[in-house]
Length: 210
Image (cartoon, rainbow, N blue to C red; front, side, top):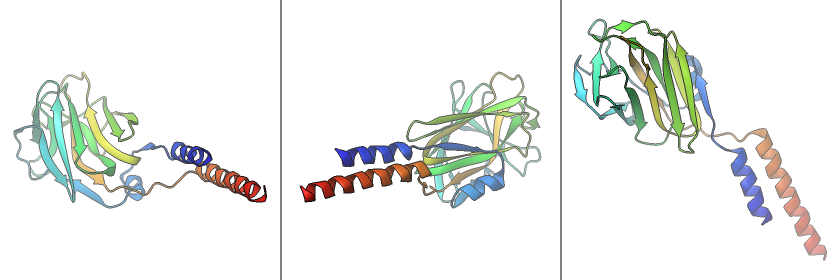
């Protein structure tokens, strides 16, 4: 019973957390190996989703809902391609194919023709395998606005939407997917573990002297 209690304390202390990063360099410093999908292989056209894609060594699926399943390649100049949904009210969702700890990218608005355009805000959300979810409002995003999420668990989905902003589609460029990081137990976790082990040792000594 005592051993079970100690394990429960450790599991509780090691519960997954999701951290938000608004700096690409800080995000990269917090994760392991990272793959990037630049979307530059896409045509400036619509694709029937969901699409299976790769960011370096990491596979994922991107889909849009609830109004249109289409995913579009878009650009300002025809060379640097980015990705957006087919309906401005849709949520664009990315689902990694394997256990990953980090997801991020550059997020901004685009217009009906796929050109970058000012947006009041974008809403980004990430969920990990423990059910923990974090939502971040990115205000007045521009082409250089980076947001990344890193979980001590495994991220299972990530989404971006523009809400009801006439003329604005949620858009992503250079999607980052990052390898799992080794979770470091918090100091209070170590304290609980040591206290539990000490108590177990005390009980064992009492029994041996009985």
